[in-house]
Image: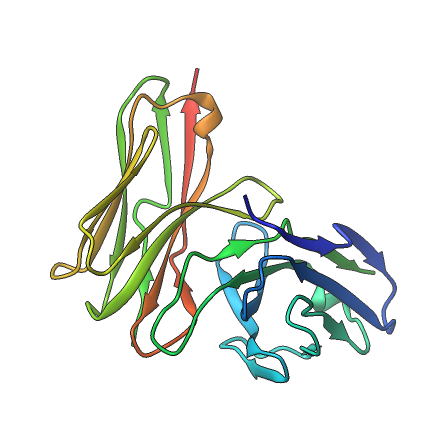
Length: 115
Length: 112
């Protein structure tokens, strides 16, 4: 069973507000990922991390930022939310090294609506 | 370019039918392939992980196969049930990268 948690599950917020989406895992996984998914559409990688103090941007350009100060925690921040940021944000993690990657586990997602 | 394709995008079957979902990938140098299930508005649930050295994996009524040379994986669901209705996604981890590349998914509806 996956032990990866996202909060909040749902968020409605006004334009211009700063928000942080939380993602935590208790499996000791070094690799963590943020994906963005619009309803009925494909998942797009926006950020990933190979370990503490390691973060990279993904394939989809995003105005969000991430940090990885602790292994278990990978928060995503939007400094100034806009309606175009309305989407579902999914966090994932897995164990891996340079040459090995294991099964990936996903959180339940945060559905963000910016009004 | 490394891409993952799932066809059909949607599938509707009567309860009890055995069915096969398809996943194609453009580069055969994969490290592993993972099948997921996603219910509406929810996250992804891992179903099966197949390493590149494996030909198939089984879990209950699910069986996933992998044919790297032809760039294909299939997910076989036996005796389908209405509770199997969901979107099924395959994702590939290529040797050179650490990211999962997802297909567009197949939206399955099993009618009672």
